[in-house]
Image 1 (tube, rainbow, N blue to C red):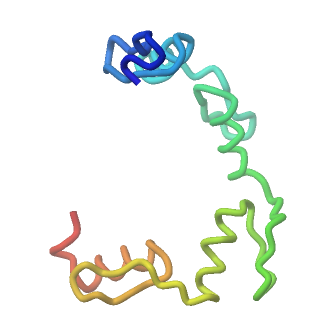
Image 2 (image 1 turned 90 degrees about the vertical axis):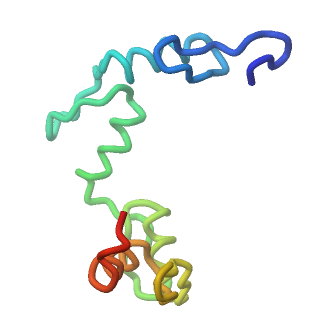
Image 3 (image 1 turned 60 degrees about the vertical axis):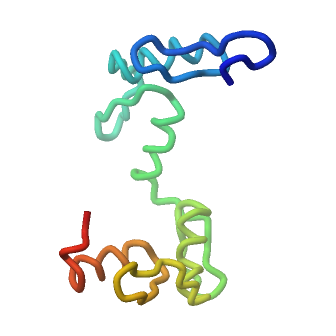
Length: 123
């Protein structure tokens, strides 16, 4: 990205991060280096740097669960949460303990296992 299409990529002077467009550098600097957060949640008062972050946060306050499991009818707020849940029904054990090779469906289960069975290996 340094010399993409014959021009030098816009770069943040503070941290060296590179961007595709100059306006992205300004936005990055305001949010990450100056801590500007002008978008506030009306329900809890937490502030965010942009509307996208605020919108993602609003899921926490929502009771809408439009994504329903085809196996047990449990409902979820996002497709991602549904996909993670369906792995339980499919017994998709991709999270493998690096110490004893026991496999788990969810990362949280592996973390719990590590804390109980192999506490010395936790970083």
